Amino acid sequence: MSKKEFEGFRFQAHRGDSAYFPENTLVSYRAAIDEGYHVIEMDNKFTKDGVCICLHDGSYNRTCRYADGTPLADKTPADALTLAEAKELDAGLFKGEEFRGTKIPTLAEALGFIKEHGTLTVKLDNVFQSFSQKNFETFLSVIREADMEPRIGFTCKTFPYLRLLAELFPEAEMHYDGSLTPSVLDWIEANVKDRATIWIPYENRLTAWCKERKADAEFCADLHRRGKVGIWVISETDELRTAVREYGADIIETNGTLKPGALELI
Image 1 (tube, rainbow, N blue to C red):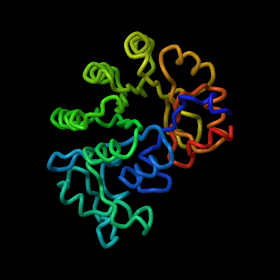
Image 2: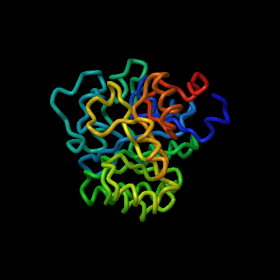
Image 3: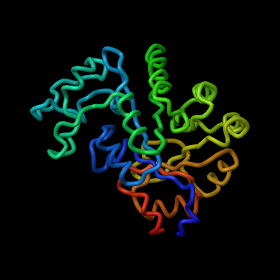
Image 4: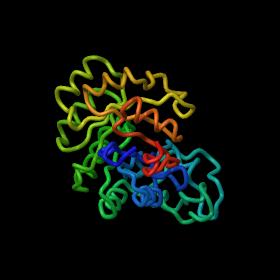
């Protein structure tokens, strides 16, 4: 595939380069920047004292350890600890001793770091739809204060959030991974087509849990009339080849096992 053929095509790093680095940390984001990814997808939760942090799970147990390497004995929800207490945990050891000392970043820290060190887009996962109204307003305030709206993308699972955020952030990318009803698709095409990406899953083991319709050439061709098409989660070169050459994907999400240079192999 020539450079001209894939001009504009984008690779999204799932939680940063989460295949080889501690997910949702500055370490994984730095790796994604260095490796040439175009988009970093991140997840957010709130601490007990109302600070937005980068964390995928509802608890710290899977990805965090005490400073001495001991696993957390009891299930510890994100909002069970203050930011200071969360910062005492080690968010790198679960991935390897070489990452000892890695800390959970706040959303503000992550946005500032990415703004300073790269030019890529930050795509925020749709978990913000579960935030309380107070936390949701805090979340939006952090994004505004980062002053990087053209490099922000919101992933929405439902139409009300899609419409709200499109109005609040007229320069931000809008990503939709909810139910693809005709009315929603018509609205996307009429209102945000130039900055919208419609996400659909690739049929593989990583998406087996998802009950939504999987990507195929006919489906993707129809969606291209409405906006860009994103396909998740891809980890193999043959999947990338199919997504790009057969489905015409504009962006794919990978956990880091596929690097942007893989386009030259297809």
